[in-house]
Image (cartoon, rainbow, N blue to C red; front, side, top):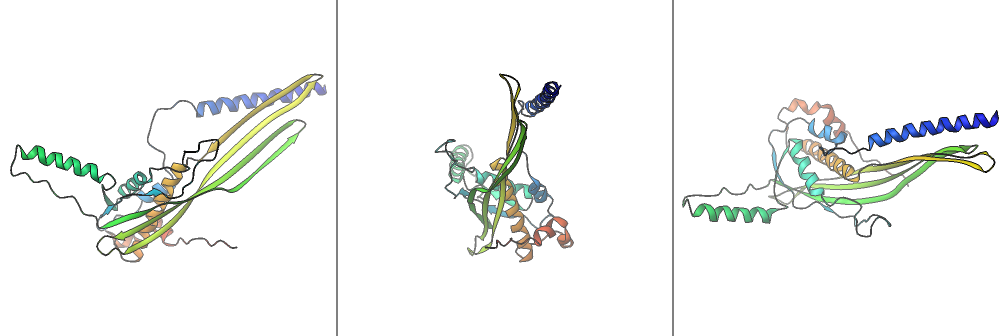
Length: 280
């Protein structure tokens, strides 16, 4: 009877693991390409009240300044963070509704195309004039300034009579610096540092048990989830941009179209935010 009960428990666990495996397989199945998922900071960004006037903004380069590479055995040449942060920043500037980003990263390509237009139109229209490029009121500088691995690790587990489960997690963090500069005076209007946690989790279950002499039952199942680093970088950039907008309103660098919207609950949350102090 004891052997029968053990077999029943093992078969029940096997069925549970099989169902979990099917669910994981369905979740990780082949999917068509779609829009990149966004975090809560994007919802805050597009919920901001409208400005009195949009600010023409230039971004020349928003680089990875960490020098961090993925640990071996991943690759000696794969960087830990995205190299496309400039594109993320320009997207955030445009989606915010506060800024008019102008092309500067690919400025040479743009100038080349304008030369081609001038050469083409000059042959057919002697009075043709190409409008000048739009000058920027502010320049946004900065970069990804930190990527720290294993900031916090931990886990739990238990095993009884050969049946057990365990969970492990790891936290990394990425840090962004965003500063806004007045193009006429060169004054740094504001400089913001934001940090986003990158969370990884591993869950495992298993059975290792002799059901009778020389017959061993062994079952294992597990799942690992890793938060995409590029989504964390995007979220940190969006958060830094909202803080820049909020600080600019407090310092009268710009104004709202409707001054009564200073009580906007999204803005107030960023007005009241303070950097946490790490106690040594």
